[in-house]
Length: 237
Image 1 (tube, helix red, strand yellow):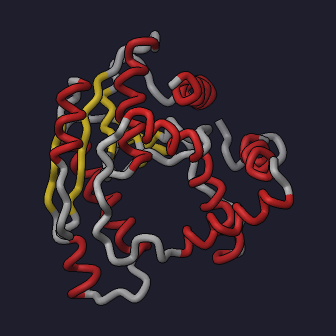
Image 2 (tube, rainbow, N blue to C red):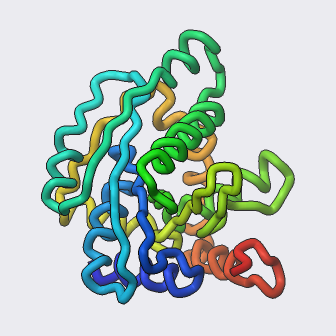
């Protein structure tokens, strides 16, 4: 966990992610990334000089099976309040809209529902489990599909809802997430979505893997470019 906590501390210091008195909502999808984030932020409270509260939230999209008993047990162990909200997002996307490319609309609807849930619970910040490789894959997708150089920011204020979205694992490589998933035996929930594993993001991941076979430090160089605010300004602090 030293690597995980070190990356979180570094991101927290660089972007002032967590402040005294914050009530941080952790979006827990049931995947390895969000579960590790939940575990790490609960642990980080012990070492951080900043006092903050944690709550965990999961959205059920209406797809089954979706067993959250493992998540609930982990939250009890970590002493983090847990809320599950059931939605009909899957019905809207697959049955009503019959989306051929469902991921974009699904992400938008999930973000809106999660933001609303966090605000209703009195949270002022929402922590998401995006890691370094997610940021780089988004950069590749934006370049190839949108003809722009863009990725998500480690800290974003949503003025319409009065909520700040933070990504504390933004410096953490995915390989460490996979390692800690095995070490901690995190209760990963099987993703029942029919589009899982067949997305443009998966293609971007494979493209980066091939690139790293030619240039082993490609991901680190790309991360350095994101952090080069004086020249590119993608991650202005």
